[in-house]
Length: 237
Ligand SMILES: Nc1ncnc2c1ncn2[C@@H]1O[C@H](COP(=O)(O)OP(=O)(O)O)[C@@H](O)[C@H]1O
Ligand SMILES: [Mg+2]
Image (cartoon, rainbow, N blue to C red; front, side):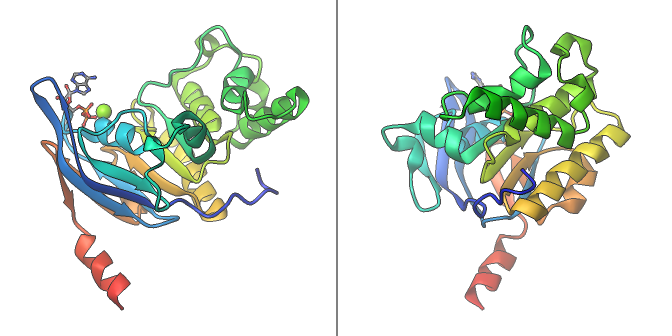
């Protein structure tokens, strides 16, 4: 991780995306432009559409209308979206979704399966990542033997395993104490600074907003992009 520079971050363009679940309109013509290497925080009340937006950006859900374009390509519509996802995106889910029967180390290895990496190399890399999140000595623990903060850090390590150019994190510090939250934020923003990955983070945590390049609020499926005008001015100059 430290030696290998990832490619620059991905550019994300969400164009008038709508998504409904039955009669619930989770997103209504949402648009968002994230520059490569930018860290954007998405805030908004519970049920406003934050997780839906992340799922659409990460290609886990398909929009009813509009499109998501990553680096100029609508990759989630191309023939191999799963491969594209593995190559581009790291996802820290709202619930950690660790595999309960597997050790921390094996959980971190999961995104590397099918990437054509040799077993020993995979193990080495997973250990390196656990070391980065301060859990090298917990590599053999199954999730049940880890604290909430430790599980969250394993989830972060797993999301970083494929050196994503786009990191999506859904409340990565939710339910963590402030010290542990700080530690995860230091890790994420440190990696962003070092590797240049693009980050979209969902959070209520004002500490995250303070570190982000930009904060975007969703209200009832509508995006309020506070800095969109500044962006337009910046790119015009
Ligand atoms: N798979 C789903 N099936 C039905 N309704 C859903 C589903 N996912 C989200 N919703 C609804 O869409 C709205 C937005 O949800 P979500 O994006 O999870 O909000 P947030 O992450 O901001 O709390 C909510 O009203 C939620 O109940
Ligand atoms: Mg959510």
